[in-house]
Image (cartoon, rainbow, N blue to C red; front, side, top):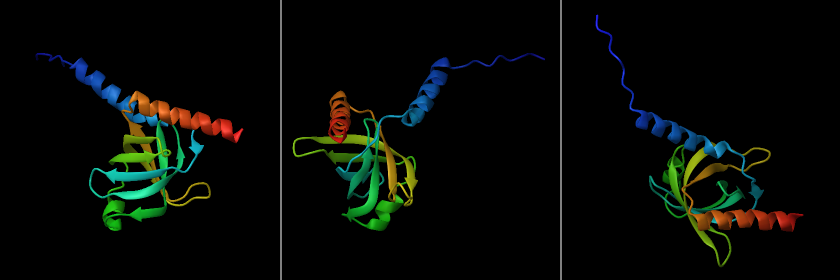
Length: 146
């Protein structure tokens, strides 16, 4: 019998490892601050709604579904918010700063003692300017809370 050697496509293996690590990067702790920011969320599967963040960091946010303006069909929007869903999000930081981010839903939850009903987003491919604005927001909040 002839033994066959399995040839590995190392570039593909490295790419898969990199993708897996990137998907897990949201687990890294980034300081979250409870801070309400108006947000417009557009799941790529369709729909749009206005909500507020419950907390936010430089790497993600938790979107509360407590006070939501469902611009379109609420049922369709809720169906499109599943783990793994990609969204386009517009965060209105203040009258001078609006941050546009691509995000992925990493957790969806009902109301608990510490969190409202909503879902957690991991920001994807933030531009340096957007990351700077979000980091400064967290630093500013730390200074005012102290």
